Length: 159
Image (cartoon, rainbow, N blue to C red; front, side, top):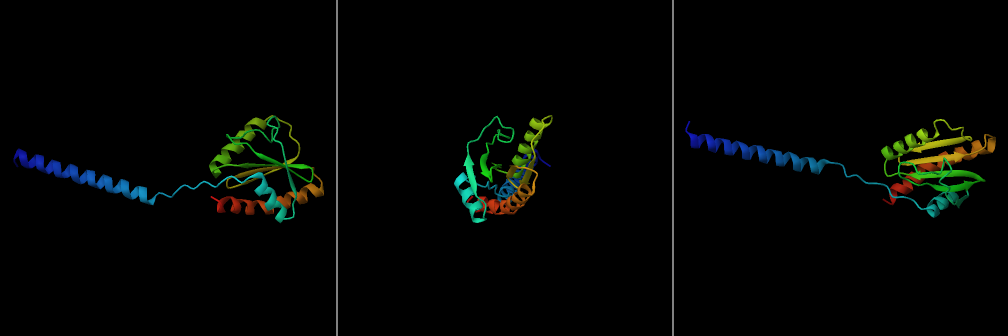
């Protein structure tokens, strides 16, 4: 085989490899799922949704020094009162960010003696309900649990 023929074969092989690489790269981009982040709901939207479920929320000022209201994984919460008990809602962009927010909370409260609360984690939402341990608190929490999936749908619909 002559030298020019070897060069020509090498050139063809390089072009084929480049073309195949570009084809794979192009196909990979076409099949990647589009990452859609759910939008954040406003305090008014959340209050209105809860009201449609028969639960009256009152928006209150966030107190970042309160362990349940501090920033978690870069997110600040919306805080409401439900029957004079705190309902704190963190809206993360993804479930992974929510998990990191929960880990952040656990790290900050590892040695703390916390008041009774319930935490609800679903998809991109982390919700704390700080309540009494009586029947009313338990019943309200069950209603909150039933309401949260609808909040997630509302959040996703507007994205």
